[in-house]
Every structure is written in C-alpha cells, then in structure tokens.
Image (cartoon, rainbow, N blue to C red):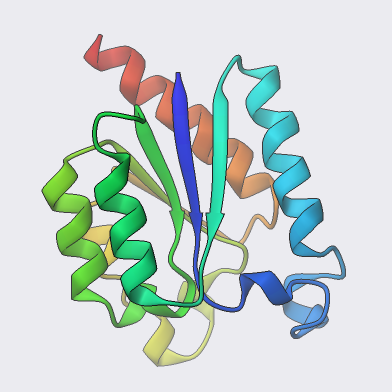
Length: 146
C-alpha cells in the first residue's frame, strides 16, 4: 500500500510556531514519525508539505494512479479551500483528514472543515499520534475496497 501524506501551510514551522499548541518537535520529527509508523504497517508513505494552496491541489491531482490513499492535514486551508476539496473529489482516492490540535475546541473559524466534506474520517487533537491513527484508518478503508 502506498500513501501520500500532505501537510499544509505552517506545518514546516513545527517546533517554532506556538509550541504550547503544537509542541516542540519539528517537521523533520513528524516526517520521521510518519515513516516509522508506515513501516510498522507495511505502508510506503511519501510526505509532501507546502504553504501554497495550488501546490497542494497539484499534489492531490498527481496522486491519482500512484497512491492508494491520502492522509491530509490541510492546516489553515482546511477552513477556506474549496479547491482542495474539489481536488480530493476529482481523484476519488480514499482520504483521512488529520489535525494536530482539536480544531473543534479552538476559534470559531477553525471549526468548519471543507476537507471533512470528503474525508472518510477526521482525527483531531492527538498530535503526531493522529497520523498513525490516520494510517490505520486508510488500511481499513483500502482493505475493505479490495
């Protein structure tokens, strides 16, 4: 199984950005964590991060025919991007949404997710462990389609 893990804007600033919310581990630590968790499950996981909405849309489109599913933390674009939602719908790959923090317990504007209108599951507030749960969810979804 091959999975594309997409991380949106400002996740490259982990460890620096609001460490009281996001922790002190940096983006490289997140990528390493995802790699370790994927390997434990026999999954190949490629990580992609961009601060640009268009680059994220392009990465989703290019996943078609190359990946079995997508784990996506669209970050701030979660709450604003119809383009990312439409890209996910266009490729029709199984997708699981993940957020490091609990977006439902944060500011009002963070409580709505365009991505959740497509994603099979949304995982919030579990930090790095949310990505491991997202991989497990994709294994269940893809396995059920086989």
